[in-house]
Image 1 (cartoon, rainbow, N blue to C red):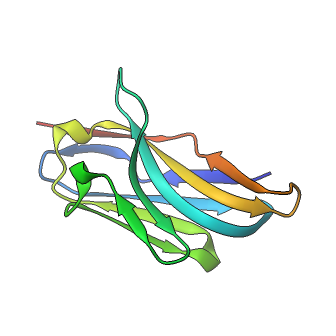
Image 2 (cartoon, rainbow, N blue to C red):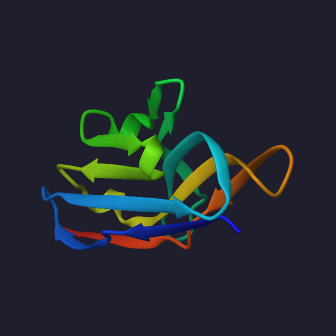
Amino acid sequence: QVQLVESGGGLVQAGGSLRLSCAASGGIFSITSMGWYRQAPGKQRELVATFTYGGSTNYADSVKERFTISSVNARKLVSLQMNSLKPEDTAVYYCNAVVTTTATPGIMNYWGKGTLVTVSS
């Protein structure tokens, strides 16, 4: 059973920084991509940043130049460095992994339970 465990959320003042990490485990054969999404109260879940193991990254326009995603495939780990945080970045941040597993054929999509990031003004 694939599990994604996030860490690093918390409360920070506007202009501050936080680093989120996500570790994947459990029967993963290969990873297509890992990334971060967020959901603010009353809003839909949205993409923040993704890292594809062909070497490409993708960022939401709202976080470009402020957030940086990095990953170590061999360690099944993805991190999100968030700088110059704004109150509108407040949300629950979810780790996502698109993988193939040793147990199930095909490409599967997994989510972590989420970690809360609160940015005070």
